[in-house]
Amino acid sequence: MIGIYFSGTGNTKYCLEKFLEYYNESNENKLYSIEDKNCINEIKESNDIVLAYPIHYSDLPIIVRNFIVDNKDIFKNKNIFIIVTMGLFSGDGAGCSARLLKKYGANIIGGLHLKMPDCIGDVKALKKSLEENKEIVKWADIKIKETVDSIKNGHYSRDGLTFVSHLAGLFGQRLYFYKKTYRLKDKLKINYEKCISCSKCSNLCPMKNIKMSDNKPVTQNQCTSCYRCISNCPKQAITLIGNEVIEKCVIDKYID
Image 1: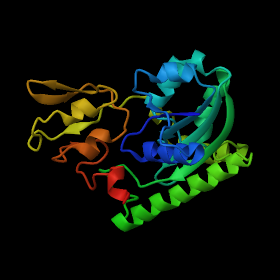
Image 2 (image 1 turned 135 degrees about the horizontal axis):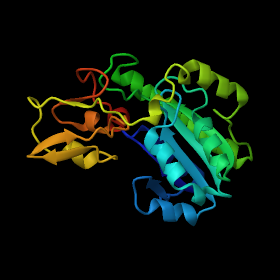
Image 3 (image 1 turned 120 degrees about the vertical axis):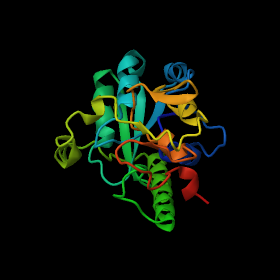
């Protein structure tokens, strides 16, 4: 079994690493970001895949949706378990990719929803203390371990894959933000008074949305809302939804 993931601030990658660690009981787990050029070949050569991603407004991040659609032929007859991370609520986060993957011939064997620390660093809502976030990660770890133990006994969790989950995701968030995640964002803001032209944001951006021009970062209106640049900017000079960075949210803060 291999792991394929997209992760903005590290939450999803951490959960997938834990899942494979418990499942394989080995330090030799195969883990590939969808940004990795080797990812597609690894999927082609593997029958059993764990796909992991964060959920945005109870829907797929556009970078994940595009990856699945652009590479639809490689998912035929693959057994796929889906892990979804979220700050609060998803409904059918796993179901969003499951329905798409089924369309392309994949066999969806299960789903797992995991609450993790909120990563929207420029909005006050959902923010918790450092200790509270550490507890959230610990509980996610416990749920991952319990899920893997159940799988080894032949029972696959179905988080986000039921009809009731579909309705919860649809009426809970998705209808109110209809196809909001289908479009790349053009609202990323850079405060040039704070910016030190370190180019860290440009190097980290999975969409190549930030380019360096005349030693200054310039946005290309291709943001997938992963918050990677915002959470890693050393001067808190970048925002997307809000106008100031409330918290730099990266997984390393929440694990001991």
